[in-house]
Length: 295
Ligand code: GLU
View 1: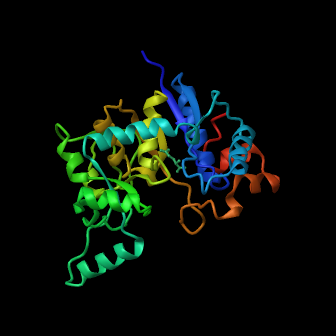
View 2: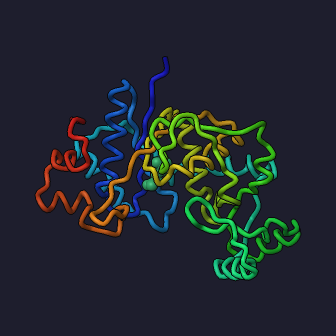
View 3: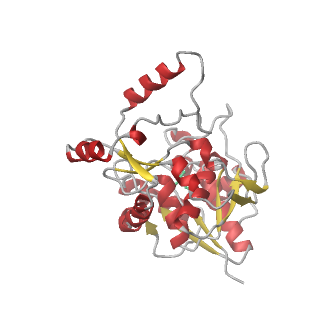
């Protein structure tokens, strides 16, 4: 039997809050109960928003909670070549294109398209699908714009990508989605439109780096917040296109604030560091997130 591998993968762009504590503790407990391994991965691909101080904060908070993880920790900023190789694989198969439209241009395009009353398609997060303008540009124009130094993002050509699949794609959900979805679930990447895969200065978006890392680290069980449930469809598609192994998924509930809103890294009072400074003990945090059986 292969040893199960779990991971907690925070981004060091803010302080960890109670929701992160819950996710990390749950991963840790599930790994332990399954006789598996527990990895910590630092998702610092966006070097403009991630800082060494927040990364230090992650280690401090998780150690304080009593968690232990394997060393060395994988830091995405040290593995850009891995993501570049995956991007090239998709590019060689003709499944990505550079997109140049600015936010303003996108907004104007969609407003015009919706002017006749027909709503423009939106992704599961509510964002409008990317207009088909850049997908239709000629190679000559793309090259010229890139050589002129225009900013751009690499996008997945969703239609072209779907045409590469042998059949429908699914995943095994051990947790539940927002509507109680569980078990073997159909992946519907089409709902996302042409997602960003990388940027001019960044060799990967979250979607690309997460599937590459999960594969390279041999992750067998992805346990993460329900806010990423629908994104799993994109991850499953990329795994198929890149020929990567497929983990099982467990999407857990989110810890909400007193008004029923998702916790945010911008809100200081539920940060682990603030709770610690106010005299909260690790055991209190475990109780607060309903995981006091973990230690
Ligand atoms: N880095 C992501 C976050 O902090 C989590 C990615 C994942 O677990 O797949 O929300």
